[in-house]
Image (cartoon, rainbow, N blue to C red; front, side):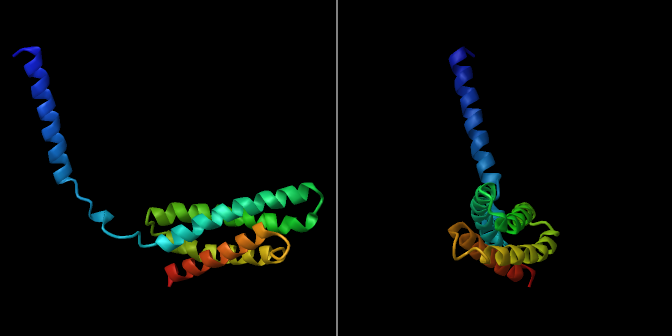
Length: 143
């Protein structure tokens, strides 16, 4: 067998193996949406809005506005709980519903703190709204 024939035979084997792997690889787990997709989506939005709100709070705190301290603290707690929830819910962990129950409380607390500033600060209003939606999705998840 010369080099050309060997290369051709190797290519044919690789192609045949790839075709067989594609046929044998089942995607049954791709059939539908994630069972906790609403929680994943709303927690992700909470994280996005919360990061913006926390930055806003820190900037105002830096300017001497101490009224933003409780808001910053509640947002920080919400960010931690929503990140953990995304990790566990994304993995369909048996612990995700328990964490979702805690996230309801954490998000409600963040919502209440942000509400105090929502009329003056858009980041607080958006964080407040996202926390309300996340809490609602978490409640639906846990039944």
